[in-house]
Amino acid sequence: MELKWIVSFPASCLHAAEAIAHGRLVTDTPLAEAIAEPAQTLRQAIVAAGLPRSVFWRNLTGFSVVAEGTTQLVERALTKTVGEARAAGVVAEIAAAISGLQASVRRALPTLVEDLSPRVGPMQSRWDTHGPQLLRGIARWTAADVIAERAQVIVVHPALGGGGSAHLLYNNVLVEAVGADPVAELPEVLRLAWLLSQLNLDLPRFSERIHGKRLPHVAELAMLPVTLKAAEELDLLQLIPDTVDLALNSWHVVTPPDTDPVDVLWRWWDTYLATRPRWEVAFAALDRMFE
Image 1 (tube, one colour):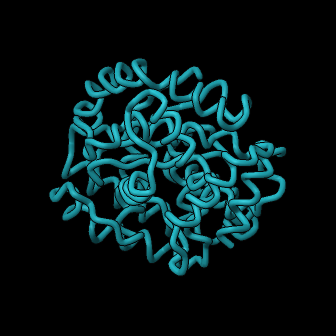
Image 2 (cartoon, rainbow, N blue to C red):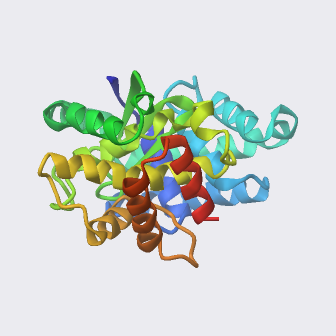
């Protein structure tokens, strides 16, 4: 996989604001204090517009590295989320909220991009050591075309002390530039491999049986045990239910509140190993198990 690494100020702002909007703990105290109010203002604007929040946040972040200015970012994200007709009336309020958020981050972290840029080299070095092998292992356990040919890695401020997300529609992933592995048992290179492995799951043969709004969540879940299996083959960890549980929590995977995600994933993975159906069949089966 050919990777293009990009340090992004807009994505850093949106990533931290989304964390606050979803009730996650922003571990960078100065940043958390600086954006508490503007992040809530943005959240309220999104709620007031009646937008599907999860989808809209992904579109905002996915577009953030290519949009020319806040207004264009909001217009494109809204159009992608709800269509051009519905988007027209709410662009100004959401754009103003994002501008306020960015101003607060600039005051709190005026050298954010300059501080993050030196971290990219070590991140690339760690990736070069294990990343290609991990992706080859993931392909062996799924399908060769699960792995995209190229992708963008959006490097953002470590608001959560370790975090990231995959944006399938935009062929990019967001990952925090942490200085060291926050969870020793799960090196951050595994998080990046897990995120990158999701990007091609929106290909029609993989996604046609899964509702579009659920696809990102099912992709996160499906690629988690696969990534851990590839890591086990490199002697980086042991794939057991406890490791699955640790990854679900450390990688901030959202699961239905009325299910035991470790039990469901482990049963699904065990069945997959025993029967080895085509990957698209197994992928759709996992979606049904979490309905």
